[in-house]
Length: 509
Image (cartoon, rainbow, N blue to C red; front, side):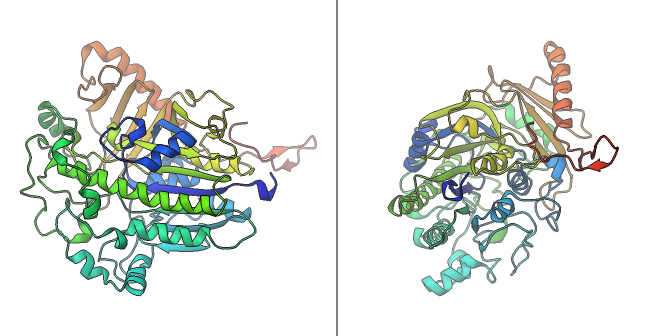
């Protein structure tokens, strides 16, 4: 592919956005006109799954095109990113792409007052803000922008907020707005070659605290309650000792906002310490409002692409790293669980110059597929050790949009920091049946999503499902084995017996 034909890449990754939060894809309660337009302009993948329900392992997966079982980046707050793992952004930078990031990379521990320890990531510009809270007051590009360009002190701005659910900072000072500002500055720079812009805001990750103008657009009393049955309270007791930010399920149909803050949790911890009680529909309203803010801020960037004549040959990816429980089954935030609300994520890809419009793909796809998709779209060779499967044939209309893979995998392995249980669990889902196995536990989960889309009926101990369970355990094990790389490839020999390096090829050859 000639250099001038290579697309620009706008890669937008929201944090902790569940799959069912886009108006055009079935949620009549949320307002997402920009994302709706992207669905019309490109391909909406309705069954995309994260390879981990937690940030860092998921991001490591879609940035390397390799499963957690191979790259071994399982934990949030890991000390460093393995130097032998290669990010797709590094490969693109080496091929002539000008790369930048705004927001969080989130591949290793971000120390107070300092950037996270960056791998060789390929980003020429790195506008970094791990999260918009005052426990990172210095060395934090978002905080510097507030102070130097807006005349605002971040400690005072966020120090005035309280509780995990409620009002946040004004739109003009929001970290999502800052991300858009940095992106617009980068994509309007003069350059000869193509660019890649990663936009990784903290929203809609908790605390759920949108600007007033966005919260005003949602009436909590007109929103549906979370997925819940009374049996969830007792059922979740079995899983209480797994790593979860919510240990005890509550009834979200009767809970109130009286205890919207847990003890004296400092602002920087509110995103990982959920409230012990909350108004469930207010939480949903705040969550939707955050997503609508993202939608508006994404539109600002796309409008600039239109005005500068770059939109036609810009490949846009919109996605999230994982989902959010948001009261489903009496739980909120995230943990070692694999409900649809945690592992099923939005994924929209639009490329006007090459892509087919208005495709809705119901194929099973994974975030691990994104790295090889980008390489194939830019005419670059997919390294032999990438494990994802390119989505480009679906996006360009060369392949049936309703099939990509037989199954998807997701895994949690001691992922959350400061959790005592060090849990390890893995999910296998074939589009109908979902089975989850937890290391060291005698219990597990088996759901038939065709008859039970809300995942209320666990068939694990159902005697009538014992044969199905055995078959799925075998499939799960085989699929899990397939996520492990054998490492350094074999050398080959010529007819004289001398070692030769094999010809580089794609993992799909």
